[in-house]
Image (cartoon, rainbow, N blue to C red; front, side):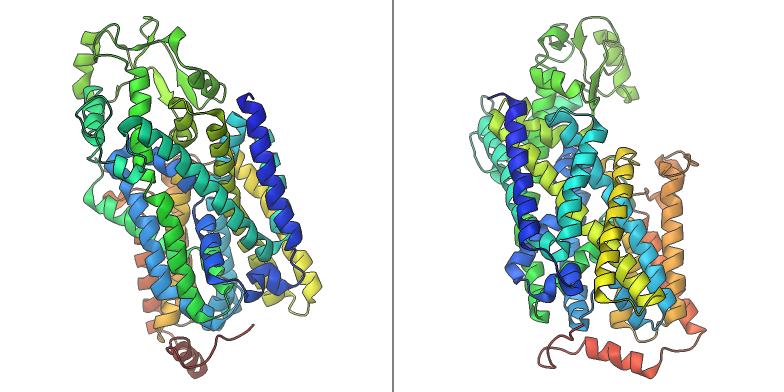
Length: 588
């Protein structure tokens, strides 16, 4: 069976499964729509949380980042994993004990202000739409390659699938759909990794193959990779050119951003008890670790396979580069998407792949007769192309397509539900039309989700960057806006509504403005995105840490010169932190 037909079958069956689950678990009340009726088993919730968390950035883009950044890509592994530890210890149990539906609802009640709740919704919308842009780009990449359709067509199909199970099923439908999606994506990620690890090293465990020797040589994989990339003018794979402060800030922004992401936090509102919130976080870490410990090996193997596909002989040897007419089928297929390109700059009929931005390597390149790098590879395709590069069976390639779509759609659904609940529950029911019925609120939530899907599709068609980069921006916004006010809301009785509102606005505006200025999101690029121009040497991916610090400083400063929170609010804060034995979680 040919690859296209097989891919249609595998992806079609997975879609049928998701839609079937959504119909079976259709939400009939606002409680089921927003928090799945607060009756989800912690193990099931942990698996759903893992799927919600492991988005297109984790499945499609993270290993691609590691493949091209090498050691520098480890900031994403450390930040995204460490954030769950913060979430489990500092936020999840306390927010579940408070027992409401949404993060803005907690902020509005804690800071006794509808304005604070509205500002929190605005922050949530900025974060969620930035994040969902990356997911929709991931959907477009998968469809454009494996289903051989235009990017726009692929996005429309993906939007339709999300519409069915997010709008119809709500959180209840999304939860059980995400369990199925986790099973699909983890199988799709690990099976090719096992095949390729065994093919390259003879060791079927990717985590161990990462440190094993390459078949037919006495070289360890990383030593082999270091040798070949440095011979082509690239940075050593096991080093980084990022500054210490930038590594620290990106890692911290991703960590605290994780703990401030509303679509992740809301998952811990779906379990029956406070203890289950911690348990869910623990199970989520277990399920996430399966993919995250595999990703470094996948990235290294993909980079090695790609480089050795093009550099078939000794560097500098006229016969050492791949002939254009001999390029493998997988390259031809990816060329059709525009995500892989080549140009024969020196007219020798071969493809040279090297770092032409390295001034120190320029003399060697000229000596070899090279006229510039001739191969352009989008880093977001590396995981999807890896099975094809390794010449694995078609059913494995089709499975990877289904996994990539599952990863992107699972997170997109969670984000869209958060947006819809922010509009219907926090803005309409909680602020502007408090007398609306439950049925009206449920309908408003579904309409808001439908509108959000259309906007998300547009952002996916016109993304501000590659998947993991866009997602990193969303984490920075979460770190700078919501995380500080949630932490202060739980652990400080001194911060009042004026401080919280001012802190959120300053953190959001500063961070968003910095990212927009350097990356050109919605506006032309105002400042060239080079380290020499960065504030304190911090890149746009890590600037959320500065936004977070400003948020804390402004919140405490404004609270210092304004009235203290009312006494009943201070008692409420103490009650939230009361340990086990003080009673069950408050129902909505």
